Each structure stands twice: as structure tokens, then as C-alpha cells.
Amino acid sequence: MAAAIRHADLVAELRTVRERGLLRLRRTPLPALTAAVEALGPPIDAELVPSSIASLLDQVVNGMEDGTLATACAYTFGVIAGTRDWPAQSRRRRAAEVYAVSPERFRKHHERMIIEYVAEEILRLGDARTHLSPAEGLPLGAHRRLLLGQPGHERHVTVCRMPVQALRDMDILVSSENVYLEMSKIFKSSLSASLRAAAARRNDAGELIDDVLQRELRLWSREHGREGLAVAPGTVVPTSPGELARIGVRRIYHAATAIPRTQTNDYDVEPTGVVRAVGNAFQLAGQERDRYAPSLRSICFPLFGAGRGGLDPETSFAYLWAGLEPQLSDTWEVYLLTRSTRGCVAVLRSLSDLGARPT
Image (tube, rainbow, N blue to C red):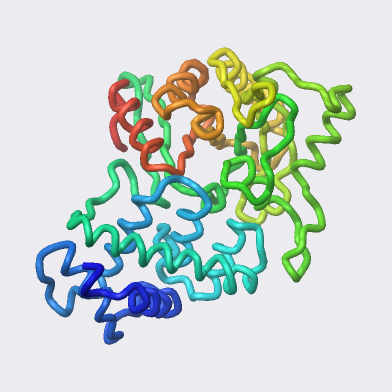
């Protein structure tokens, strides 16, 4: 396909798609993208070209590894569920938040990089004559509610595959932190970094004016005599949601589960620390629940250690489930959050093995 379709043509047409949106492609000539779709599958009717291009972009994005690039790309093209009809400016603004930059800075730099990368991925897939297939598990931006247990004793767990910024009306978000309660740098791709960036307050130019979560964590460390010192693995520290309150988040629980390895950039995540963190999160939630009106009801956990912690998603879920299963009850709506295809597949398969079924 690389000889027949030029990268520059794909880039130009992808810019058009970004500007018009996936719902406004009809009667828009996109010959390079149309040729790419046909090269990756059987011939298609002209009336189906817009939906086929949308499917192509959806599958390319869903096939990306977890990280800021995949998330920003999904917002740029409106791939994340619920964003397909958003205007171009709204999609650009949300994608810019992923990189913690202003929309103008994003337009000049990151957006160009994303569009060129997607064009390269389409060419690569065509060269390999690989048919794109839907990502196993859930599409990015989707969730699935599952039922566990025997009749009369059922418990619900909802699996979400999405960036944390796409969650709405979640009372408590649990984040994995290191035992020094130092959050990931605001420009990185971890859950900790995403929460830190999304919760921070900025001025009209997009400049940081209040690093809310890290500020509150430092205040807690100072008040508890742990400034510069490690806390015990499994310690959970609450903070306000900062700007995440705008999307309905009410509390952030920072679970110290990652133990830095000396003189490396790596971490260790121990099962006992994860189990203790889950238990402490529920205990703290129970203490805070009725301090709010309406009462706190939902709590969302990540796959601890599945990023920089070096755990594979299956192991991470096993650690999490050991602490989570005894806590399941009608009191809390429990959510499991992952952005990656591998993580989503691992959780859904594991829950299926435990007898979970869709509701």
C-alpha cells in the first residue's frame, strides 16, 4: 500500500477528518483513506465509506499501547465513546489536557505528531496486508457491568476501559503512588500523572497555578511527620479532587503501593501492600461516606503495578482481587479501571473464570 498511497495524502485527509468529525464525512472526498480501507479488506460500497473510515480509525487507536499518545489520539478523532459528535475545538481541548498543555500548543505540536503517526500506522498495516480486527475486550471509552456470586448473594463489578479523564460522577478514585507519596510528573502517561494533571488548576493561558493533589499530599506528610520519609506499603491518603470535581469526582485516595528500587527507575509492588491498600481504601471510604451529601457510593480501583510496577495485568488483577473480593457488598458500587487492551482482556477473562456474567 505504501507505493500506491502517499503518507502526505493520508495526513492531509486525516486533518480533514479531525476538523469535520466522524459524523460529518459523507460527501467529503477522502480518496487516500478510502483506498487504505479497501486495501485492508474487501471492496466497499460508496455509501459505506464514511463508516468504514470511522471503523479504521477506531481500530487503529484501540490497537495502540496504553499511554498519552493513544488517549490524545482517541480524543483528537472522537474515537472515545460519547465524543464522536463533539465539535473539533472540544476534542482538541480535551486532547490538550492529556498532555497538560494549552489547546494552541497542542495544535502546533502534539496534534501534528498524532496525525502523522496515525498515517504511518495505516501505511504499516497496509504493507503487512494485515486485516484490522476489533480489540479484544472492550473498545476504548466503554464499560461493562458484571454480576458475581450465587442468587441472593450477587455482587456487581463494572470494568471500564478508558482514560481517567473520561470517567464521570465517580465518588472516589483510587490512585497508585510510591511509598514517598510523590506523584508521577505531570507530563507523563501513568494514572498518577493523569490525575495530577487533570486535578491541577490553570490560568486562561493553560499555565499551572495550583498543583492541587501533590500540594495536599505534601501537607499530609508534613502534618504526619513523614516529610521526605516513606510510609508503609498499603497506606492510603485522601485528598480533594481539585478540578476533577467538574466531572463529578469527589475524593482521590492515594494508595502507597510502589516501592522504589535503589538507584533505578523501577519499582516493586508487593501483594501484601496491594491487599492492605484495598482494605484501607474501603475503611477510609466508610469513615468518610456520610460526611457528604449525598453519601459517597462509588469507588474505582486501578490495576496496581501494571505500569511502572512491572506486573503483568493478570498478576496485578490477582493482587487486587485478593483484597477486593472480601469487601464486595451492596454498600459500594465498585469499578475497575484500565486503559490498555491487555489490561482490559486480563480483567474480563479473570472475572469470567470467577463466574462473572454480564448484566
